[in-house]
Image 1 (tube, each protein chain N blue to C red):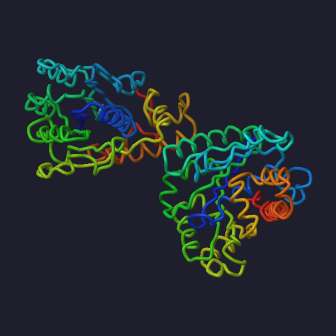
Image 2: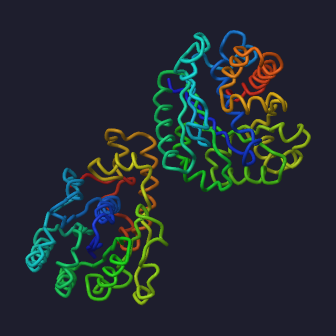
Image 3: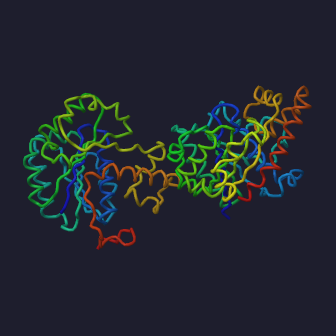
Length: 258
Length: 274
């Protein structure tokens, strides 16, 4: 079964794009190929990261058309139905900041469309700090995108770069406990200069050690390897398992895309 | 050429007296001067000529840590340093952002330098009780790339031996096959280390494995006190030179340092065989 995973989170700067980029990387590692819908037309950094990767089929569809949400969702559905290759088992949708304003009203349309097209629907929600972020999460769980996704397929992410788990407001709100969901902590990539080198270098994270972009040495390679491993574990709850013997993996390496 | 060894100076009790920083100063001195005329025989002719010596001082910052070698070369009489730039020190406390940056920088420098000349990287760790924390910060894969050899400052307590055994469990790639236990004479004579001597860890690591069991003399009380007051964390040869320059310090203190340097090189040069 094909899977579509939305990288969601209402606040800007909470790590949605990093989560989306990691999910694409996971798909490349497990299935050898991935599909990406970049919904953030203003800062399409995930699209730019995988621009030159032939194993990633990608499309830019602006999903924060405030006031014209139907067009946004229509574009998404059309691409999924007509252009997304059938053998791409994982599709990642990088939602823009404040996507809830655009999409929440149409959630009764989005999820059935995806389901009818044969997708298992999952979502990651990257949390921001503060009461406002907590309310946005609650709103999404109550009546927004997350409300229509099965509890085992929605993953709330605490981005460690923003602070410890206890420092996030939602953990103190008893109301959040009435919803069921998976929770995880996305580890921080440190130190800052290493994170800068890794985040500004295009392409899949997991191939950087081979490509050795400028400023990427053995320390960065080990730091990245460890961070990726921890991130993949953190994101695993929403990710489909690869077939036991996947034809596209040869000795743990991706076979070139045909 | 790829001649790199990294000495991970670990163990010791927390605070002053653990012996890690003194051992680091001894190691730096040995690799800096152990191939010089007059020291070669003392150092068993084991120290490679023209070694690059790199230090990550993970216990201090720039104010309190090793005083920069190059700075002293510039400010003291010429000729003290035959090879300016031979030693490079990076500061950054273990577990901090600055520490991670320093570790990354010194690791890159070490790997690059080892392509051209013998390179010895010495890591001055603080006391880290949790081996998992050590592994998380230093990354066993990177330590393997750096050809890391642990040097464990042994005390006489149960925890000294138990923590070493824990290191072997958590970081077997680094701690299982080779290393050095340095019995710190600050804690007592050789016989005082009976817990370590009779332990299963010693049987596995030393009797059946590739570990060395050595003894590190500490400076006697008076020169140790003077060193602490006058030139804390100064390289030993500079401390010696400082004593020479200041007539009032000449004599026992200088002799003590010189004797200690000789004794350290004489005992420790065998680590080059690991």
